[in-house]
Image (tube, rainbow, N blue to C red; front, side, top):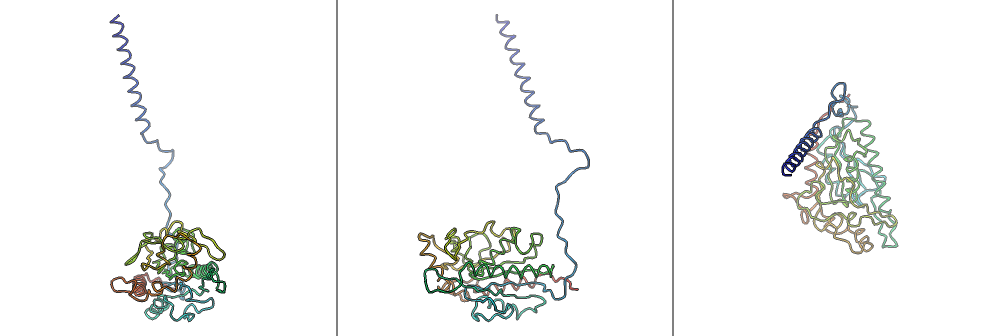
Length: 321
């Protein structure tokens, strides 16, 4: 009886050992790399850099600076090279200085002419254009200029900048370019030297380079994201942020500016009226002064001018034919 038990135990142990060996073999086989397919070795496809000519037409600038003014700082038929719709336009402090500093062959400075209005729906007598209409017109005109320039001048670089409503439009363009669906094709995203935004209504803290004293709040369109009333669509966050342009995008927002540093909203419809008038609040209107925002002694417009100047000075100088 004992002898039979010993044989049985020995047999069970042997079976267990065989099972263990089989498991080890199966694991080794499972982890072993698959044999290569027949034929020459394959490697993942790599995209070649976009083909570009060695030179571009003589009338092409090395850099196109595209600037989009804020609410009430432009009009549809304004001169994009010598705008006069609002001589106090904040962006003119940057663009006029760039025009004086660089010849047009080096930096073409183009100010997008659009209606730049925001009708307040809480005021029955407000006959301005709706925000949606204004923003869409600005976007359409900016896209047309960028598309035409890129088609004619394949080696031209770009600096995009905007303030307030213009910053929303500029940021939307940059987001689309950075996510492969903008007026500058995905293969040519490297042509965008930088994006500068002052008081961006779709700002999200940390989604770009936040310059200087930067609040943790968010843009009004983010706070009111999803709200739709006639003529006003609050678009929320930009899908995909700035994509590949994130490291080239710089945002300036003064603490307390309701356009880019909006509080949490409890009554959206009351908030719309406040935001419609936010362009008149002292914080939003003072980016050319040091009272509410400054970085190392520079105002927002001075910072933007220095930043754009450095980009233009360092930009390549393509050949012309």
